[in-house]
Image (cartoon, rainbow, N blue to C red; front, side, top):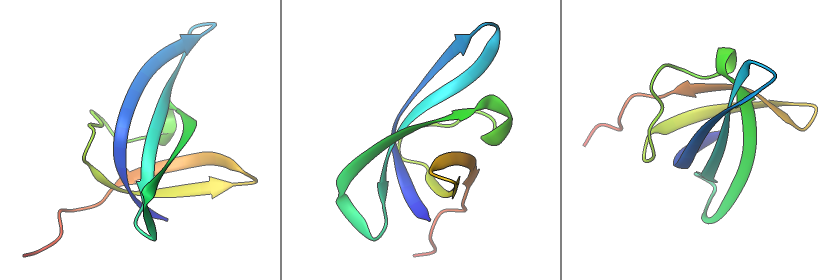
Amino acid sequence: MEAILAAIQPYEIHGTRYFRIAYALRSDPDKISEGRVAAEGIYKDPKPGDRVDIRILLGVIDEVKKLSAPES
């Protein structure tokens, strides 16, 4: 699902790094959804405003990939 990151918060649980993310889907830009992803499942240096592809498996965010900026 294509989305825009609204917020990112890194944190650790028992030494394992995760990111709490808030995002708006391209198909519903007025609704902010939240989830978490393990550090291995997200690209380096995520920032609010990044255009991303979010893969959800069994209701859990499995992977977040950064998409290139749209061409003008």
